[in-house]
Image (cartoon, rainbow, N blue to C red; front, side, top):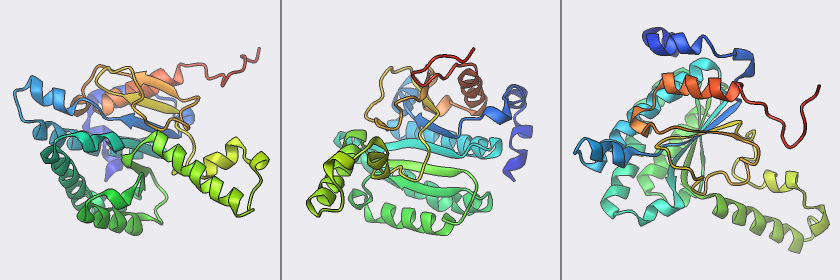
Length: 256
């Protein structure tokens, strides 16, 4: 069982003991970047970098579940990723379906609920079926929410929300002046989730890459030079400790 996960990882266990369990981020979002460079550094095909990235994800899901994090959102495939070579896109989709098929029973046993944000209809049929099966099987689970951002783009998400609100205005269901930040948030893919408290980006790139543009307005950001396949529970614990050291004022001032 995953409750013994940290006991098997002595370096991570020593670091995780420094985490204040009462101040955990409710929602961690991760831009999993660097699979290709990881493979290139080792003179390996990019496909093996993506495969190693899936293995890293397995450990991070277990670690977040064990810690008691509420939501883990991972940027698995963006709307822009369709521009990559067809062979690489096919490999990524195959890895997704294989991950869900292979891990679903263990995810379910450990009370993980699988969710997705993005346009599912444009994904390959096999991927759609595995996602639907995974979400249906785990929908009653009350542990970690594993939120997969697939065929996802922040701008597309906001545009979709605006379109839906415009339809409601035309139909007379809502007045333009009644549209608030809260109502917009209710029409986003993440309407049932808290905004991320912590965003982690691997590979050292200093950009958001069209990820959760609305939701990260006051999210704390940790960027690490570590390439995603090398990102492990120890590095996750370090990022959480960094987060807990920060003074989150949300635009206000410290209370004296």
